[in-house]
Image 1 (cartoon, helix red, strand yellow):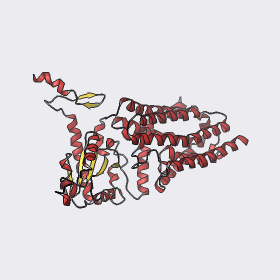
Image 2 (tube, each protein chain N blue to C red; image 1 turned 60 degrees about the vertical axis):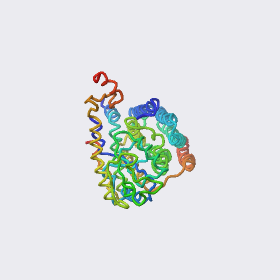
Image 3 (cartoon, each protein chain N blue to C red; image 1 turned 180 degrees about the horizontal axis):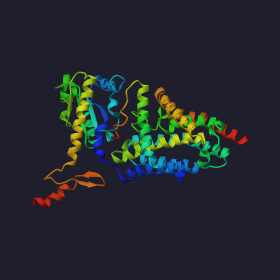
Image 4 (cartoon, helix red, strand yellow; image 1 turned 30 degrees about the vertical axis):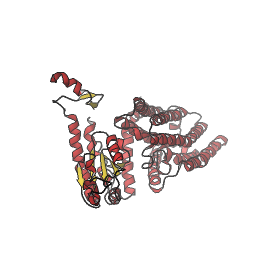
Length: 174
Length: 224
Length: 45
């Protein structure tokens, strides 16, 4: 029984507002409501980065929020997918070029899916998250293939460990 | 991703000891032993919450300790009144009792219904978990397979609580299933229709209303 | 022997039963809020 193959079927979503106007956040919360019920795909909106798979970011990344954004991204376990929601998060939007922000989320963390619109429609958000699920599946598979000279990743106690691979391939290089 | 090994170990031990408590209950063991084994498993997760440096984890551990203070005395009183009725602390004595315990101790069942939302972290009394407020309480620092253990322990808690409800039906299995279904819909309706209270209100409500209901039931069972 | 069979089965299957109860509860809770709710069997198959 391979637990990693079930990861796609119940993704947990983390939502972070990096200094936006709350328009996109209201649309994301509308996804949870009765009309666009995102829970029917098995998704849960959590507030905890350590237990979530998909990060939904809204808003241009302001100076105050960018350290928190990077910290939250670093706290999420692999594999992780970032979805940037809204024009501000994709490119900076109307705030592009201002002194307190630098055009978009992808200046700081890698973004996998861009969802356009100001503010984004709930249908678009659901579509973006469903596309992110495909990327999550690819990343899950990519974690299991070998890296660096096709060395097989070590499996210790059921978990994949890549830490000591460099030591092991050093004799092979010299 | 783990914080440190003791934290992950306490999470796993929480799951194991809760499963052990459930096994003792289902095999008809001593009710006091079952309640204290459940207390042991909850105190393990409290220790796990205090062993990290996250303030949300500490807050959740504090709130879990307070919720123990709210539900534990009521459960003890219910166990003592089952002893007064059947003459034995064993759960098997209650399972094999010829008439349903519900008819003899209805007030204790109401007290159990008022206490179950605290135990299962349902909405009027879910201060220990408090979804977006403290984001899960003690389980905030768990991740990966160790969070799976804590999450499965939550599922085991459901079986534990519904077995406690089933205890009230004696050897009448149909009534027991009816009580479990009733409790299920009651808990969900309560969860959907009520807002979260703070911990002082929870403690006051539990220690005045639920505790005194269970205690009156105990007095009735002693003197009749 | 037969008395012990049902409790031991319940103990061994307790995480599975609890998970099913939890999933069913999420569906019931969603139906009470007029949502569709999560699919019942997806996490298992």
